[in-house]
Length: 345
Image (cartoon, rainbow, N blue to C red; front, side):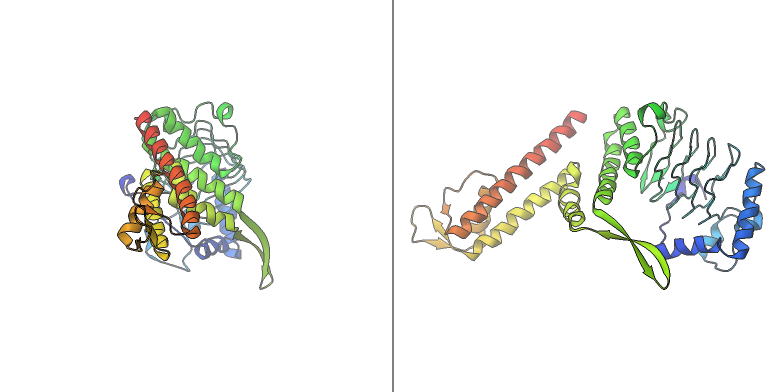
């Protein structure tokens, strides 16, 4: 697989659990033990040890021999520095609390891989594919992330992501205590480069991961004699996703705010039709025409005030107050986003 065609692979929880379960069988335990011994000898030539013939599909058949370590657990294992894991598949693997300094994960598949608590000084992730890869508590001083694809967004081939890495990481960032810290670290690097278009996706990923941390609850659930953690989203998770993410793009997507504003104007125009509007100059004349209510909604949204139509009753007055506040907020937000974009450029 060439670097230009490097693509992320999305797995289901069931598939990841299957990969992990393979290493828990007697055959898997023996293979894992021998693989660790080979690693400790300074080699990554695993041959048939990194292959399971029980389930074959097109993806599995495309993985080079000896490079399928999906689901393996090699946490807290002492191995030499600088091992070459280039183009390995580690989906669902646990590489936690290990010293992986100077290791080479170039163009490796690290989907759903956990590096929590590991030391990744000078570790090379060039061109690696990452989907929900976690680095909680990891130290990434001078890590090389050039051209890595992080949750669908490729990093630039710039020296701050290459030979310079994250210089003085321990002074600026220390350990990544939470997943948002990983996105924040990349965001700040793009900000230093002045590459704001590339920075925006990682700001959004950072905010989404913060939302998950705040509004997702984990509880132990027992099923079929097994105990596992189940995640529950609180109502606030959906509220923040709807308003801050979908409607506003966390203050970075001006067109989302524009279409939200347009939706508010159109939505209120239909609500105003539930009660007749009164003519400003002749109160005996009323209207529920959609063209008239759309005009009435637009002038209330922009806080200009209608010179032609008046509210027909208390219901209209309540709607006008809500729409006016919404319009003030959304128009201000659009101005702020455009101003920030112009200043950046």
